[in-house]
Amino acid sequence: MDIPNHVAKRAAKLKFNSRLPFSANLPYQGLFAERLPLIHAFTLALHHAALARRKQSLYRKARAWLAGDDFAFHAAECGVYMGNSLVACAQMLRASGLKGRFHALDTFSGLPDLSEADLRLAPENAQYRGQKLFADTSFEAVKARVAEAGISDSVVFHKGLFADTLPHLPAVQYHFVNIDCDLFEPHIECLDYFYPRMARGGVIFFDDYGSREFPMARAAVDQFMLDKPELLFHLRTGNDGPNRTKTYIVKY
Ligand SMILES: C[S@@+](CC[C@H](N)C(=O)[O-])C[C@H]1O[C@@H](n2cnc3c(N)ncnc32)[C@H](O)[C@@H]1O
Image (cartoon, rainbow, N blue to C red):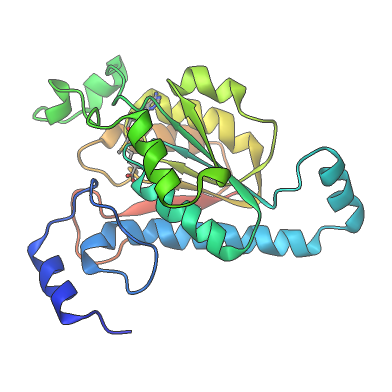
């Protein structure tokens, strides 16, 4: 499908901005090239979960149903900000026809204080050394966006620091986790929690692995994955940019 002229012209003038809502529906606009690896990784996770569901025995399906967990797909997003990636993925989940849940974790009031590791690794001129980033959002605003998108029944919010909210997540296996939280310790906290809880074929997406602004994301993922067997896959659509190359693993 061709991109209509007026859309292409408008997109050419705009610059990518993580506040701009984007759609996971075709045609993908060039402006959102930075978002496409997420769409790809999420689709992969949906395929793996659907395949696993088909292979599941009747006995296991019945056991899950009796345990009150007949969801075919469990997902989480660690770092929601205004809800743009959350809404796009939750809409794709709905369109897939799989019954699923999306856990949305964030302070909904911006990045926590920088740790010693963050201060050591952050570029000298990083804006966030002197300013709290991603504070221009709110829990109420994101909840309203999710309601407006018609996906409230599949999204569960967990407001607060990951260290406080992760222990309260349900005891399930996850099929997709988007780790988009920029800083060192939050990456480690999320990986410590989710990696052992991933279903086989489940995908963990690292939005900031290739970020020049937040090199601590890559340092944290590399440290965590050092003794793990999974390969890191790198994806980039379009030109290079400060955070254009995205990374994911598929759990063995
Ligand atoms: C880059 S934004 C997320 C962007 C969003 N995924 C999107 O694509 O639109 C990073 C978010 O991580 C959250 N965050 C970082 N560390 C956190 C922590 N330890 N606990 C809770 N939220 C955290 C921040 O509040 C911020 O909203």
